[in-house]
Structures are given as C-alpha cells and as structure tokens.
Image (cartoon, rainbow, N blue to C red; front, side):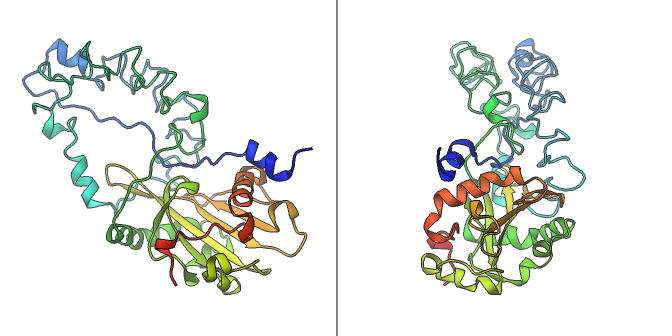
Length: 336
C-alpha cells in the first residue's frame, strides 16, 4: 500500500489560486472607426463578436451562469460578487497598478489611439488574418476556448473553487505598497473572519507577527499573506531551529489578493492548531482550518468539510516534513 505521503501527493492539489482568470474591457465606439463593420467585427469585446470571451453564446464565457468555473457563480466560495464578502475592497487599492490600468489600450480614453488593438491600420489588430494572436483564430493558443489555452475557463483543470483560469503569477508589490494595502485592509479582514466566530479568527491579530510585511505565497494561491503565532508557538521565530510545536500552539495566516488593475480583496484565513498527541496522526496532530472572506468555514480537519482541507495536510507534510509541517516565512521577510 502506498504511504500516506505518497497518496496525498498524488491526489492533492493546491487550488485557491490567484483570483481572477479572464478579464476583458469594453471599448468606446465614438472614435473614427465608430459604426464601422470592421470595428465591430474586430473588437474582441463587441457584443456582436461571436468570439467575445463574454458573448452570451460563447460556451466558454467565464461569467456564464451555467459555467461551474464562473467567478460569479453562487457556488464559488471566492465569488467576487458575493454580498457576504470576497469582492474588491472599496477603500483599498494599489495606485501604481491603477494608473497602469488606465493605459489599457482598450480603455475608453485610449480607444482612438494609434495603439487601439481594433484599429484597421494597427498591424497588431487582434483580428487581423496575419496576427498569430487573433483571438478568433482556431490555431491561436490564446483563444479563450482553445483546448491548449491554460486559461481556458472551461478546461477541466481550471475548475478550482477560486479561479476560472487555474494558477496565475503573483502581482509584485513594493515593500511600501504591501504595507499600505495590508494596513488598509486589516479592519476588513478582521470583520470578515470574525463572522465565523472562530476563536483564532477573533484574536489572532493580537499575537506576535513573524513577517515584516505581506508577501506573495505560491502555496496559498499567490495571495499576499502574513504569519502570526500565539505565545505557545513563540519558538516559531527560531524558524528552521524551532523544533516540534507543543500542544496549544496556534498559527494564523491571513491573506489578500491583488488584481492587475490595482484592486485588492480579502482572501481566506489559514489556521493551524497543534492538538494533543495522537489526535490525528495523519496530519501530524495539526488541525487545519480555512475561513473564507464571507466568514464561512471552508473546512476543518476532523470537522465539517474536512475533506476540503486535506490538500493542506498533504502539502504541509510533503514540503515541510522536517519542520513539523511548518511552512516558514521566506528569509527576506522574516522578523528576527
């Protein structure tokens, strides 16, 4: 029989990746090409364009009600449209990224520029026959519905609960940006997690923080995270020399997502609690709990939704078997 670790590695995935996958912006039809059939046909976001990623008739429409990977699906715990939380913050953002997004060649203020991707004279016109990135081209690997497109919102591998597009790269922030965003979002995080009535969620920010600033974590969906530990887990600060954690040690990792347009949103709260010996040998006697941005408990070891956090157990045991399943803060972000 295969070992527990091997089984976990072969069956576990690290879903919860950076959110969201497919985002397109419309164009203003007031420029020199307004009313032109060429403009309408080549605009990849035009309502009349059957290849529009958001066309109602497009079976790969990432926002289609029938699409189980829709970022706005009611069943998606990371639904950015959910009233209970998880949507973009109205108070916090990254100004640098917002400014860059305003230079989007599809933005209203840029729609008539010579870089307009739908301009007939633009050699990079996305619908030009010679353009290998033609979004409607059958051979185009960037075609939203292409089988080879790793961001195909209908791809079987893309159907994780938090993203229609599977894994994506983290958005890099400067130290100042990461600190400003975290400080701005902290009250929103606390209010979101407090809805769970989980003891750790209610008090973790009073514990010592072991990360200098929020940093991107590939194993937590490329969200930006911070690491907290309670008094019983104070040896966590010794990092590789910390040794096994004692009963009662508790760790919390809050998170937030950053979008390319500078918007930010509260992510899940990840909790580890060291339980008495033999409480659950398969998890190293750790209880893993994940609390979603709307305050719902996604899953907890030996509790409701336990199967949903098995990937946590598998990942931590596989990656951090020599540090009592602790994934340590990267060196450059450690508080000494």
